[in-house]
Image (cartoon, rainbow over all chains, first blue to last red; front, side):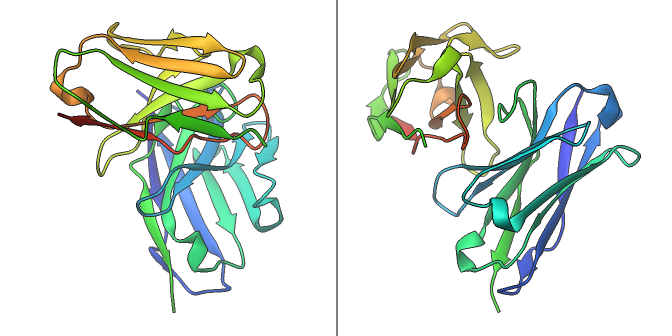
Length: 119
Length: 108
């Protein structure tokens, strides 16, 4: 059974880069024909799609974040990663890694990790 | 950008009753690429419906999705205590793939 787990710092300084990794278990990431994505949720608010990646490296980003976002996949480690640079307090959110059969359709979710941007 | 508006914001019902949640899009959602998610406090969302009407694996058949174009509905035929949660719709037809603001289904 596919499982996802986010990892990374819970506190990031303003203007710095937020980096998160999602580890995929229950099979090699290469064995799944899924899109791998990131969705965030500010405390007490709704959901925002950040971007998605396929195993062949194709990436798709939310235009509002595209200039600051990098998503990559490491099939040898069964992981995919998110980097969001130049963060501000507005980027404080629970970040979820997801997997789905279609782009941005999240059939599987990690438990989520809260990242706070603060000095 | 397709804006999704969910109504009502809060729905107060009793177990055993029927729930009807609405999601209206600012423009047509092509191919009915519309999904519904359920989120309970402190948990990640869970996919319920995709393609407007296809139930996710193992989803009880009391949940059903319908609609096309700009108007979509999630129905729960007989509410169970575990169904009280926040529900989000999402369109994945056109980037950015946006979510509605959510409907909170609470126990009356």
